[in-house]
Image (tube, rainbow, N blue to C red):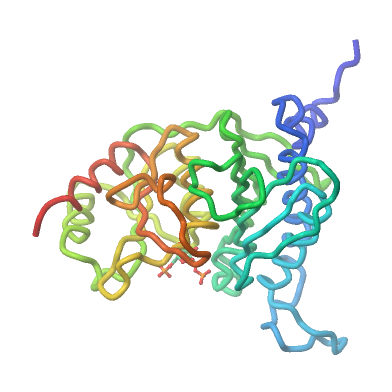
Length: 313
Ligand code: AFP
C-alpha cells in the first residue's frame, strides 16, 4: 500500500481530486492559487509604486492591483477552461478564445480587494466567483465555486464548491496545505463589522448598530472586506455589514466579485448573506458594477438586521 506523505495528501490539488471536484473547476481554483503566490511575492518584495510610474530600471511600474489582475488573467487563460471573465480592474467582460470541447467556466474576480490598505501594511485579498458556461453575470445561487486568498501575516486560501468550506495555508516551500476543513459558523456571535460612515447611516441601520453596541458586541473592522469576512468565518460567528448610506442607497460593495463569492462561502459554512431585504445569492445581476447593501455572517444577527430594517419609519 502506498502511504502518501502527509504534505502531499494535504496539498490543494490532491485535496480537490480527493473531493471529486470536476477537473476544469479544480484547475481554476488551483491556478488562482498559483497566481496568488506571485501576487504574494510582489506584495512582500516589490516597490509598491503607483501605476504609470517607472521603477529604477525604467520599466513601466505596475500598481499592485494592476499586476495582480494581469497575473490572474494569464493563469485563468492558461487553464483552457475559462471562456469569459469579469475583473474589478477591467471595464468590460473579457473573452478568451474557446479551446476545444472541454467544459468551460466564467469567472468574476477582484484581484486585490482593499488595495488602498497595502501601503499601510494591512491585510488585503483576492476574491473569486466561478460559474459554469460562458455567462459571468448570473445570480450568485448559480455559482459552481467561490474562493478568496488572504494576504495577511500568513497567506491563506479559502474555497468551497458547495461541499464544505476549506482553508489552506501557504507554507515556506510555496505549497498550500490544508489547515481547516468543513468550517462552520455558529448561529449567534458577538462581533460586528460596520462599514461606511456612521453619519451617513439611515435611521433603522443606526438603531441596529446601537442595539449591537448596547448588547455588548465587539467592533472589529479593518477596512478590508477579505480579512473582515475571514475573521467572522474563522472565529465562527459575527456579522459584517456595508449598509445603504444616505447618498448611496446600494452601499459600496460590488455584487459580481465581492458579494456573491463571499455570500456563497458564508452560506456554505451555515451562515447567511442578505441585502437587508433578500438573500444576496438571489439578486439577479444587471451590470458589471452592480452594488448592494450587505449583511453577512451568523444567521441570527443577519435575521435581526432584516427585522430592524423592515420597521416603517
Ligand atoms: P479599497 O479597495 O478601495 O481599499 O476598498 C476596500 C473595500 O472595497 C472593501 O474591501 C472594504 O470592506 C470596504 O471597501 C471599506 O470601505 P470603507 O473604507 O468605506 O469602510
